[in-house]
Image 1 (cartoon, helix red, strand yellow):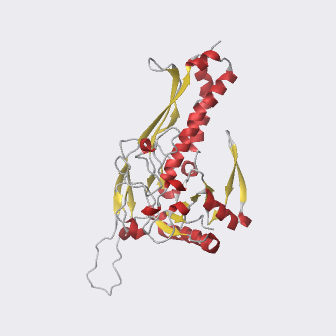
Image 2 (tube, rainbow, N blue to C red):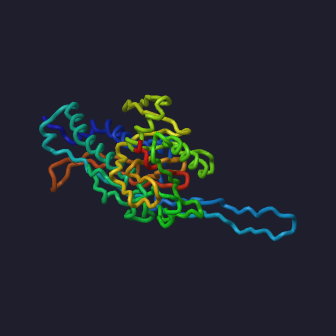
Image 3 (cartoon, rainbow, N blue to C red):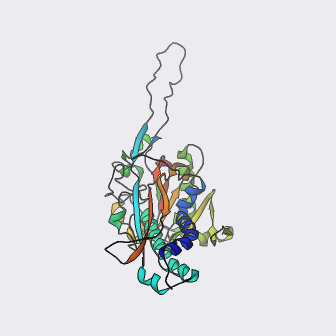
Length: 358
């Protein structure tokens, strides 16, 4: 007895939700934004936001009584637009598999073999692109993800309105001038740049440099609140963990669909994570013009998620399976979403390179 498309979809209906939820929790940044409700549904061809690069007023100064006041404003309030990009992935199950199997256990096996495997590839590619500007090539090629905002500020060939550079560049604020992020050119004069520092010896000054970056980002955030999320490459994290071993604590995270252990180490109030998707081979030291270490020697992103969001024109979703007509003997479900990453205060974010140097 074979499995019909109707029976397949009946069983799949209970598993589609957990698969989509696992995508939202597929990396530390998505999970943090989702927890803060910073993945809102938002329609329109473009997502428009503003940022204030400096104080939205000008102090008139100290005066005696009848002087002419200087009321010229210094505010740098700028609008920018980001285009949400739609991702679509076909999840195919050969009809031959449906003909050769029957029963709920067989359906679950097919779902684990096909939809779950495809979604793992989608997560790996998007995580890698988010952190480095390069896909792993499991489901998407790098060229197919252009237009999505990556954290890697070396990326300069994005497509679509408002994406010309990645978000954070491993270079001094002055050297970032001329880069354009979300359609707005970086400039020191109105605090539209990311903070940067480098480590030449982790044992000598690694922890102090990381703490300094936290304080710098907190200062320029204006609210006094520093980054709440730090993502490191694995070797930088290993050095960090070694120096902070006495402060390590293990937190068990449990929900309806999975149980996992997350290692959390504190810098201020930030959670610090290691990501194997932060592959240093995808960076280019020649694009760092400042003297010091380059990103291939270690990367730590300091992210203040109060100023990051990922509006959704279409929330992540997996459709029911339908029979394909003509070209392939398969049934197909589609994973789709339409969104993009947005940063409204770049100076609240930072990068520290060189963390692999012992």
